[in-house]
Image 1 (tube, helix red, strand yellow):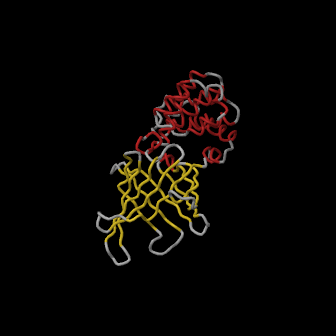
Image 2 (image 1 turned 60 degrees about the horizontal axis):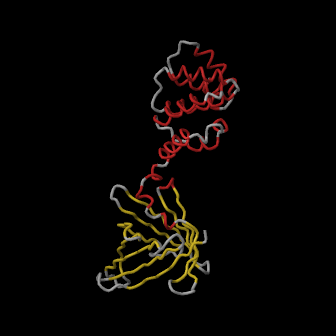
Image 3 (image 1 turned 90 degrees about the vertical axis):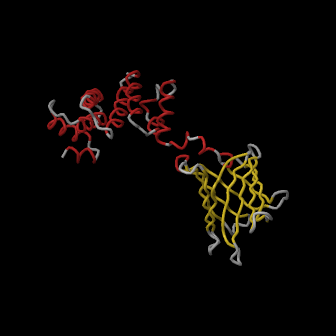
Length: 279
């Protein structure tokens, strides 16, 4: 019954029933942790710290430990026991705690948020939550991130607009393309696959038909450019290979060149765009 009140966020009632069933004899760390959180949310922070401490001494599971110690950190910080809060947060981070949003938003941490130890713990916890954010190869394509106005290379002919953004915790780059006359749009997902050590792009456009999806593979950043390859068929059924290259031309410019060939010797330019950063 206590768990029902706990899940309903009826903290005072939950605390009362947990008190009745636990006494000091229970060796299960989970209800002690829930008693602590019920105390905390009903304004009894001293009781919360004692219940958390009891739970921590009862060998909490790998699943419970990061939750328990992150909540202990909150209670310690609220009581202005900042060293204990940082120590509890360290244990939580070592146990796999992965909620940097709590660290950024909870008022309990306001007083220690600028401390070097807290900042380092926050970095570690952020990396646990979003491992791609610290994987160097996942950042190869970051030069394309931004909002862009796009012209046919070497001309004043407007091709369209594109917004490129990091997504999925830094594990993907999402392209949002709109043509100049708004009659055509599409999106692509771009990601680094650590199993093969290459980038891939999957494009889906609004035009429908058999050409709505394009796949590019073997992506590799070298010589200041992201190089993709592709395979397909011509209208006559001939094998068609492709090169798709994004040239990093500095902080505010990217050139996008798509080429195709039936023999790998003579290459045709499918399109050639230059992106100019808006922001």
